[in-house]
Structure formats: C-alpha cells, structure tokens
Image 1: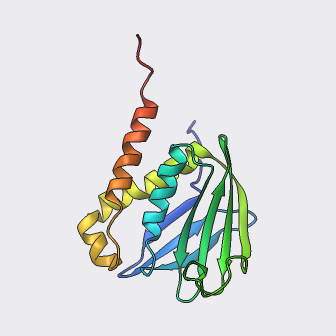
Image 2: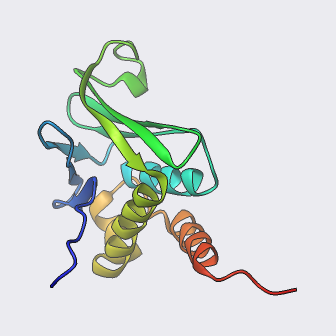
Amino acid sequence: MMKEQKQELIAYQLDGAGWAELRVQAQPQPFRCAVSYLHDSLGDLAKIGLALQKGATQAEAVFMNEPGEVTLVVTGAKDTLQYELREYSDWASWGIVAVDDHVVVARGEILRHELVRNIHGILQRMDVEVGAKRYRELWIEHDFPQKDYESLSIALHKRSLPPTQP
C-alpha cells in the first residue's frame, strides 16, 4: 500500500521571461494567477519560509500581476498557521489602491512545518531546474534568492538532526 502524499498548498512556476504562475490549493476552490517580474515574489516566498522557520508570527508575500496583485498573509504563534489570500484590483504594495481595498479569495490553516517545507521545495526545485543565472535572465529585475534559500536549507537540516548528547 502506498502512502498518500499531501498536496502542497503553494505551487510557483516560472512561465517564460518575466512571468510566473502562482497556484494555491485553497478551499473551497483552488486559486491561480499570473505573476509579473515587477516584484520579487520568489524572494518574498523565501523570506516567509525563513521567517516562519525562525518562529515569526506574521509574514506576507506579494504577487504582482499587470494590473492587480495578490498578497499571501500568514499569521500564527504556534504550530498551526492561518493564511489569507487577498486580491487587489491594482498595486496596493505600490500605494495605488488602499491596503484595505481587497477581496479575500481564500483562507485556511496549515501547519507551520508544512508551509516552510512547501516553500523550501519551491526554492529547491527552482535552484535545480532553472539555476541562479537562468533565473536572473528570465526574471529580469531580480536575482534568485540564493542566500535566503541556503539559510532556510541549513535551518531545516539542523532541525532534522537528532539532539546531541552531553
């Protein structure tokens, strides 16, 4: 009997020069949107992963479209986190629309370690399949978040090690 693999909450895939696709397996229905190079969305994801791994109680990532944007807001002090996906008609992160002028398109809960591992998996796949040099060519304005990816990898590795004996 095969063990059922849990589907990741977030999928993020480059989709040609300057574009990516964000997919969120939210309930009651999945959410999908195009993401523009105008914002460092993969960098935001890397920062969320690292911050949550270190115990942050709130983090967010912006995914710009042209026009509009989606913001993933994650909150929680313990192992279970709440997430909310906020959709804006224009760029709230650039002050074009008010931060409160959004529609919540998805919300739910996820375990902290599941979201951190999900984000690490996105970064790892991007590093292996695309690489830093090609990422920069495709993403135009932003470098691959190598430092945050490596820091997250180290933090996850340390967490998985058994405790040392005195």
